[in-house]
Length: 313
Image (cartoon, rainbow, N blue to C red; front, side):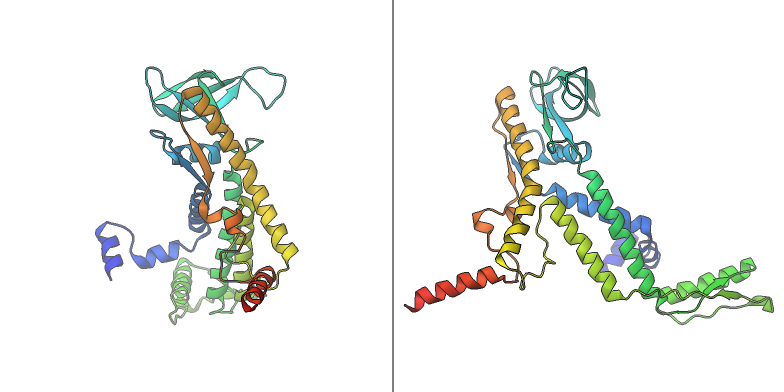
């Protein structure tokens, strides 16, 4: 196969070993952490930032909760910086000074004079912990799903090995079961392999676990202000649709407002023309009041009925 040959030519792991290791919690957590973080990175579109790449701004906002925009000494171009607040002020969340740092520079700045600090939201909370939270739940649910499917092939108890040879035999048997093969545990020396009385299939079924996975993903999208494609809206009434859209707008509005305020401050201090907006795919403005999925709400049915009545006159 093309992909397998390509991976092997690059010195990467063979497909069998990779597939097995990729079923572990650590691997799946890293996968979902990176995927969810990438999806949050796409919420906003920055324009006219010139030498400052939008991804550098968003990375710092999502990871740290704020991003410093300044110039390195003796340079004309702007740079997005990680930073921290310092100094004494009346309030514990408001400062006048900000230290900036990047791989080639670190220094102190005065906010509003030679650095503009853009906030991720009103409380300057990073979004990374939200990503971590959902990546943890999704990793657990997917490991549960994999274990449920594998253990369903063998509903016996948990084998207890008394020797290294027995252990090796049990591991080989379990590897065969994982790969969908017939296997046998070899009890070398007739020493006796004991099985603990445990049903590893659990009381859950695959459909329930898959449904839970979809609900977790839907909850994540809702928390970042994105309507999920998993939603079944055919039984929704108008009030439910409007309430759901309002919640999504609430989740996005604070973040976009802070980014727009940051653009205004950068433009005022540095004479730039930065702009930022919500990505068109998730902008629930007037053009997106009709849900852009292949499901239909009662509200939309009423609208279409009224249009048909007008056309028939």
